[in-house]
Length: 274
Image (tube, rainbow, N blue to C red; front, side, top):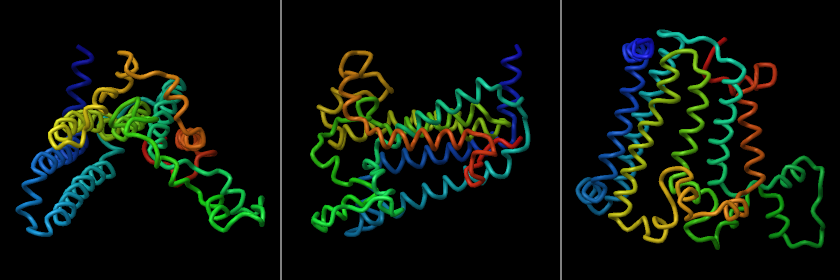
């Protein structure tokens, strides 16, 4: 009975309704734009269809996202309030945020930590190296690292939609330390529902359009770690292909974001107010 009462209070909260309305618009807009991609490209812009389609898609997604953030900033500190999180909950939130950022970090080119030493003047590349090599050493990212890899590698072994998984895990971390029902809807309920629906739909659309190859579908799973549980993937393969530098930076950012005000930079404060 108590759980039902809390759920009813959550559903009646004005901020929750507005935030979930935004997430619903975002989800429906993405479903329609991906489901009818070919038709919109053909009829919206004629010869310039692909460009017109992308412009329309980006505009609608931007407006939907704006509605979510507008509702969050308007209602995030009002309405149904929750007790401050326990130290255990705060620790768990940092774990989820770190896992989310770590997942997203593996989609980026490897971070070249040595470039920071060069930028700060702590290290000078040997003069006998070619300008191309010296330039690569000073570049903060190795943009050619994934050029020779196939379509299944690294974090895609965990899920073939790692960007959705990473964002959802980061959101769960925010929901665990939420101060209001609106914050729970923004960080947790909205993203989990929206990304689950969009992930399932993307498989269908990509399969139909030939973007999801039989090989990738056979070797990966949409559900995180599903391919490991049924033996299609191995932990050793994942360990060999993860980028340690990216994991280190992602974990550090998660700690700073979840730390107290004395450690966390002010610009990273976004969410619960004490």
